[in-house]
Image (cartoon, rainbow, N blue to C red):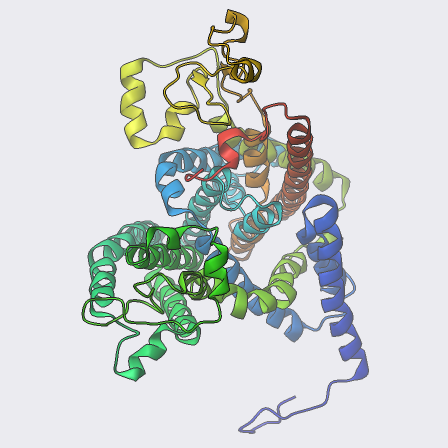
Length: 578
């Protein structure tokens, strides 16, 4: 407590009851997360329910000040969670699937808003209220999306990149909807088009200006610094800039600047956090490319010879250039000694490594659990069980689930439909993944495991041993040649659609703004929308977890049986480099 007129916050030892409540709260958040992650890849569900139990909707064991602190710390966890998603984004795959991600995002925005006008008949509400309800349900929970992808191991896959990009676009639109709903709740005379247009154009500006600045400013400066031997060249003070501690400070300041700038500019700070992580990953790849150019060919290989491993204890010689200067971090000596240490030190200075060292533990054990618990704090569980509200909420949740599941249709291949060759070539220049969705599977000749040069047809093993040069029968001439082993699978579409279902924090934010500003004149609308958000947030992660578990089981079984179908996800389970 603070006494009147005091210039400082008086320190009071917390009571034993408060200590026990907070201890059990944090322990249960982590225990339920661990258990449910192992069962259904959805530990966040337990954390949401723990928030309902301990917070105002349930027992109210947490005081109002603690709930406020949990929401604020939890949002910091959300920013770091989205930043991690940016760090793990494959830039090449993101470029290749940008149009597809846009199509998924537009589908996930338009259908929920359109289907929400069904509420006009269910609840006898105005079109503005129906639009506000649809705006709350058009978002996709970024925290839930990144958590599910990380738990399932799909973050760097094509499917993961498409999903995260689409979810990010939905989030940006959702936060624009917050401004629109807030304006709709005010008097018509004070409604300004700037309130609606500003977040849209600022988001577009961030999406265009940041990559352009990286291309036109950061890339030339990085190349110049590498050519000059900076920052590891003399004077010795500059060498500190190449350490992990300096990189940690630089990444953190960059993240803070992007988040603060986007907030004051009027766009989503989560979008800025995602861009920050993607820029850090891109910069790491640039540094790796410049450094690899100075290494011998063998230094870039993952497998290092025993001789190279035996030299691990030898000191590194930093001068590599003609003038005796080294590039970013320790460099490769001219004789190739110490290449493994150089690669390891570069990996230690990468954004993902710094994140895992400094951010991962507090995020996973405190900040992220508090974020999902804060979602539970906002669910008015005691007011949601009247019969009229329950059945309307379930029906609306089914409609909103269907609206997001349709997003997965973009990943379906239609074997009975093929577009013309000329159009296919034009689309392939934009993205290979786009036209692949709609084309018939082509016949591809798989090379045998053992490469045979100078032979059109592989020779059967028995014929090779006996020295028989006669061609094999037609039925055995190409034992490994068949139609590409990419069966028509619904798993990628189902996983994408199910992962888009969870609304989470953005949905609750929009509905709360609509309620507080008076857009939801009917109290039942807010409760029905809350039911839909809650059920969708429960259904999405559980379904994705079960699907991923099934995919992993099929993958292991097919690999054990050597059936040739090692990945049920096909191209969507791989990265662009695979």
